Image (cartoon, rainbow, N blue to C red):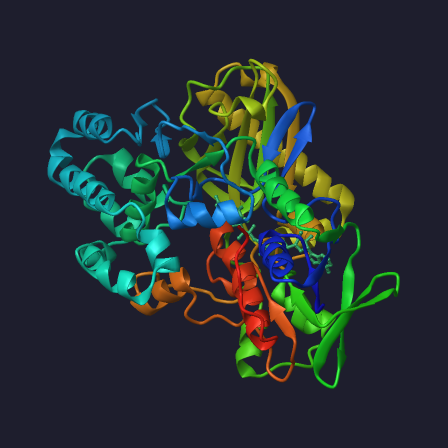
Length: 503
Ligand SMILES: Cc1cc2nc3c(=O)[nH]c(=O)nc-3n(C[C@H](O)[C@H](O)[C@H](O)COP(=O)(O)OP(=O)(O)OC[C@H]3O[C@@H](n4cnc5c(N)ncnc54)[C@H](O)[C@@H]3O)c2cc1C
């Protein structure tokens, strides 16, 4: 029986393990952390659950191809928790833009809020509705046959007009100040997101394919890890890989921190690409393309999700929108970043995230990786800054949530340095090889969505593969899990094994 060593129990590593086991390989996952799931994780403090990554997950709708894929991995069926609004926004004077999933309710709310924007509102609503005609377009593009993909082309071509706009440029067509300010931010505070992508995601919520899995990220990851273990796989926790062993330019095993070596016929790395190439393989398998992939991001460029301020509150938050942009009276510098708004996740929709009658809020701030890496060299200064950030955020939230200070039971602040420490990445969670400055360029969009420029292997090295975010060009649990399947298909082909999926 051929064997595979997998470095990392993130989504890509677990999926590689599951497909490996199903195809007759003996697989072992070495995981540095004590939990499965990598970035798809949550942590508990005094009964409150704080979630690291999940905002939305696609593949809930039964009979879709993505749902079938998640079922293979043991992740579905899982309980979808209903949310009533996408990302909503509020001005300091209390004026709300409720981005309702109920399309009729959304249309009438928007027209009430801004009657003079009726023509643009109609266009926006038509855009959402136009995506409802084909509920499995995402599954077909990823798993469909050539013929099915050809058949779905008219669906895409009829929507090409939505590529003309980004959320930022579409926002400029509104007259209402709140809509003009909110639209550029409603997708991860990223104005460059194409309107096409936003509309597609929004509509998939309305037909019940996209949503929130009850319990959050770690609960979801654990289901997949359980499937892997049921299939006979082995996860060795707290075992950090420092070196990939090679023989005649063929990967043949790994070395752990304590010097122990383990041999296998294939090695799959689900760890950070840069660390795998430059540290575990000592930079021996590089060409120009690989070198370019390993170039770091500018540490002085602002990155979304640089700081999380999580609060456990003894108050019920179930009546609030699940995701809210709170515009500030005046800009404030928080963690070295000039903020005009706070992006807040409010978990009142999932009663498993807090003890009965209580609730969790997470504030997501942007910032520069360099700001925190410099600070983290001085533990006391780093702690003081985290405390200051929490204090600023709490004071600002108090205006929208009067009395909040008295209700706080837990405060938990994490930064990009926390991500790096727990997930072993470089520059926090920012471990993509591809950088897209212009998402209205169709080549970038194709690569972003379909990974037309993926790098699963390294030049000159045999029996080695990457699985995970490093090869996806797109941060999503689905796309990273898919890489695990692709890698095992490649290994099967090389080993003359006919690939099969779990039943
Ligand atoms: C803030 C944020 C929000 C997100 N929101 C969403 C969302 O709403 N929906 C969605 O679908 N996706 C979302 N994503 C993306 C998604 O979480 C990631 O794309 C996905 O989890 C990455 O999986 P991965 O397979 O690349 O592995 P990772 O999760 O990066 O896991 C890698 C694993 O390898 C381990 N490891 C690293 N080095 C070593 C070593 N030397 N030895 C042993 N083990 C090692 C790590 O401990 C880790 O467990 C979000 C990501 C972020 C950062």
